Length: 82
Image (tube, helix red, strand yellow):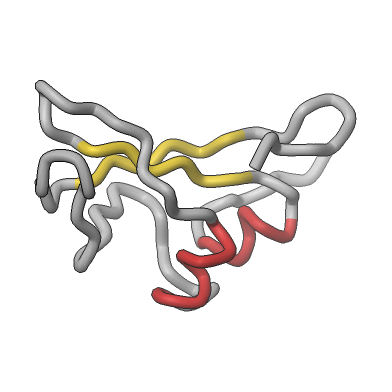
């Protein structure tokens, strides 16, 4: 079995994975309205996601500029719930 590497935005999208962005403020933790498709438009498909802290994003609720990213695996039916 060959190894699959999902280390960039483009590779995640090609495998139907999503990326969910959350505010990293301990008192907020809101899910941000940013899709993997929009992240690819902004940062490009070659953006490495390992320990990535996207710049230029701000939580609309609290104003925090620290963002956490979590990979969202596809559902058994192939959808990601995006």
